[in-house]
Image (cartoon, rainbow, N blue to C red; front, top):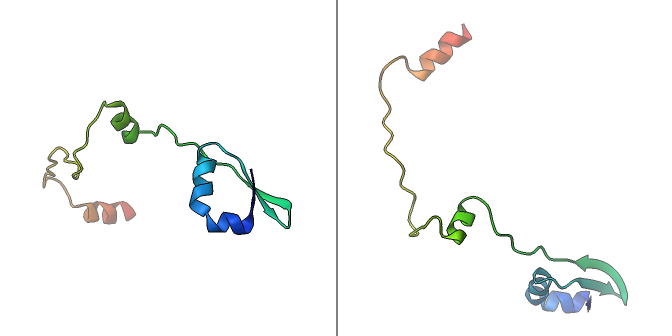
Length: 87
């Protein structure tokens, strides 16, 4: 599809949506093609978004809650370990 730069600027979101849907948009300046807009189709996602899409995981919209982690107060403080390692 040939589109002038002025037309493209006026209706940017429409042409970006068309490109994402698979339409190739060729931008023209003074009736010469100067650029091509090709969309990247939406991907299935990876990681957590893929698990949510497949229904393997659910999310209620809140912050994730993890296992309670308790640090013990045994041993030397990290700062003392660092100073000892430096010599």
